[in-house]
Image 1 (spheres, rainbow, N blue to C red):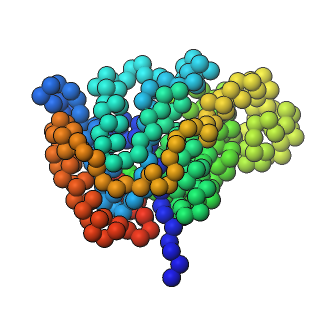
Image 2: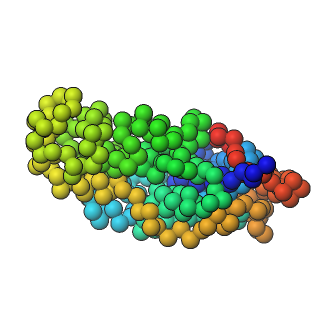
Image 3: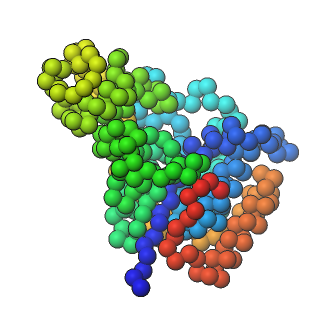
Length: 311
């Protein structure tokens, strides 16, 4: 029987930290430090391992601002984010690394850039069968194709290239153009006036990229409302649209410095139990040790596949 390839799981740690911060009741240590979201994320990552994952990379926004903030004044930043949340980023990174996970803490670039770059690198490995980018963020749809899929762990939904096209109306390579026209409120840029999800998808489905769209709307040959007005808006705001596409385009040359072997989880490092005690979560240490013992006894799952639900 031919050997089955590896599944690589790449997790959006920033999304997970936000998710658990708002989903869980707060928990402060005796020293007064808020740690509930950190405990939730680490528990979820151990759940990923318990589901069968073997190779895991986790990207975080160590600093929420990036080079994109220099390009657009209202691009997302750390303003308005609860200090109890932002204070957990370095703690989360420390606990995850000591738990044995490979972490990519991003500074000038963003977690999404690291996920895209790591996915491209993993997909180039002939030993990898599938790369699962674990986040619901629509930006990452641009990376889908070939071995790479997008996984919403909370909903248990996997998006391949066909599913991305069905969801957004455009192929993965047109996602940055689609976001440029429609806007992305989560990232803080508005898109172009009058351009909605349906009109952008219809036009881009035919032309692929913004610069290929004819300046004269009457030449489009697609069924959209007010093509002349849309075309005029695009003509008048072409540089802005291209800037928005730049904001939405991931940096696939991000320096993630991790091949497939470095992503393999082999157990927690020394000090993990002490860190778990520090965040009042000794059960996380015992879970990690149990998983490591079971992996050592069985040499791990043969194919690195994991249950595609949240832990």
